[in-house]
Image 1 (cartoon, rainbow, N blue to C red):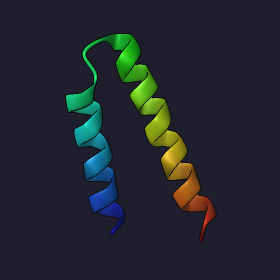
Image 2 (image 1 turned 135 degrees about the vertical axis):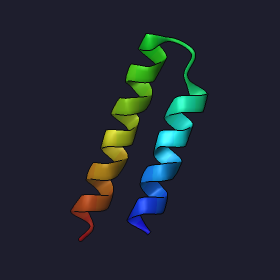
Image 3 (image 1 turned 30 degrees about the vertical axis):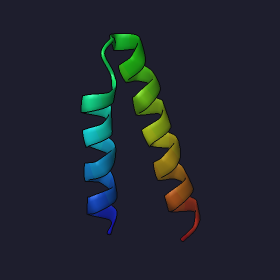
Length: 41
């Protein structure tokens, strides 16, 4: 399940950002999502 989530995040980061600034925001959001998933365990 976690691998699928990471794959989804990486896909969205790769496809969803057109600029370096946009990529930074996407990476930050992905990190925050991983923190939320990690804190639920």
